[in-house]
Length: 97
Image 1 (cartoon, rainbow, N blue to C red):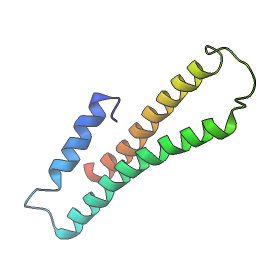
Image 2 (image 1 turned 90 degrees about the horizontal axis):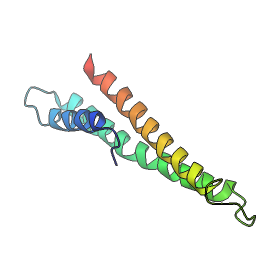
Image 3 (image 1 turned 60 degrees about the vertical axis):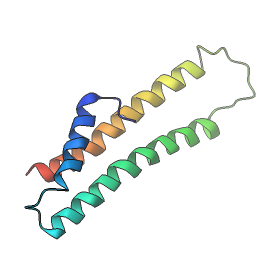
């Protein structure tokens, strides 16, 4: 789930680079590992957010939807987008050199 179009284009560029003929096998393996980091890092962050919300919120208390669910949803979307950005920028910076 790519929230920012720039991230999607950078991820596509990294995926396209792994099929370049000029790459050594070592560099190709590094790109594959980095693509896995992008994929699993993103899902790991989203899983940690869901787990934190489910376990960290007292669901038995009566609170309006605007005071609990809406801020949690907005926060989860923002944290997810930020984590996707940071992971992809880390991988992009490694291969940009």
